[in-house]
Amino acid sequence: MKNILLLFILIGINGIYAQNKVQKIIELNSLVDTLNNKTVKTFEYDKNGNLVKENYINFMPLNSKYRNTGTWIYEYNKGQIQKSYKINRPEKDTILIEYKYRGNKKKVTKMELVTRSKLKDSVADKYGIDGEKGCIIAPEDLEFYKVWVERENKTIISKHGKINKEKVFFDHNTNPYDLTYEYDTIGRLSTLTQINRKTKKVNWKEQYQYDRKSTVREREYFIEYWNKIPPKELEIKYYNEKGEITRIELSNSKDYVDGVIEITYDNGLISKKTFKDKNGNTIREHKYIY
Image (cartoon, rainbow, N blue to C red; front, top):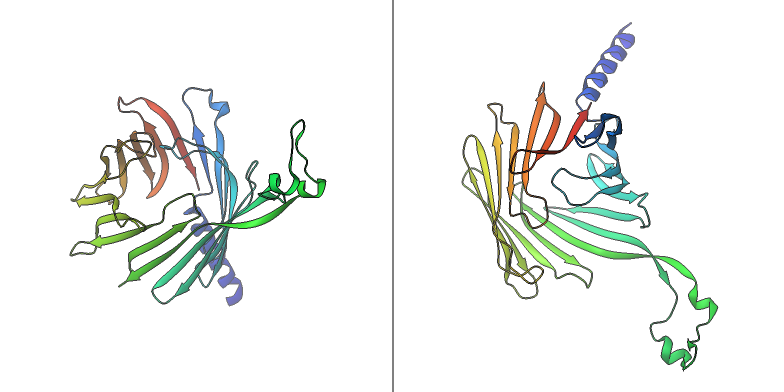
């Protein structure tokens, strides 16, 4: 009898727990018929509540410029994430992110499985140039194979339970940088600075200001992107009396679309997010299903 009672209790707990986890996101578009509104993201969890799978189905974050399709799979050990994979990427290969922990440091390595040709870099030197037909290439050198390429690695250093610094390296296409974190006297993030590891110059700096009803983030750039220095970014988050974020205002964003995100809650859970332009016109909405 006790075992049966315990089983019912566990089932009840799992049922309540499952209700508090978002299962899917539906995109609502006021410009099309509601029948065309589609699920754009789904979630799966293990028995411990860890997120183990995310399916992106032409998903676009509300203030993003780009859509995303693919499946993220997450692996854990004792509650700590160990690996994550992104598969089912249209016309792209698998991404693997590995996490390693040692003391107050966490090492994160991002790899991509890419298709490469066995064709030699110095084809002209090897085969010579035929003035009429160009390079004559052996068929065996046109075969393809898969190889893991390291795209990014970073070391995250923590102190007293808070991130103190990130050392970030990329492949040859992007300059490496450091992220340094500073906190105020009550432990809130006050300054975030990105520094080029090669030149030691500041790329950008963020300042955070807090009051009871809002958090203001201002980012100032010191280097050029696309041949110009971007204007100062401004993000303001507004809270209700429960401390829940209800509105986010975005201005001069370098990587995202400017506008306003309004967030609606139901019994403490996000039920809907709405993205509007600066004039208050609704662009897109995301409905959360639990």
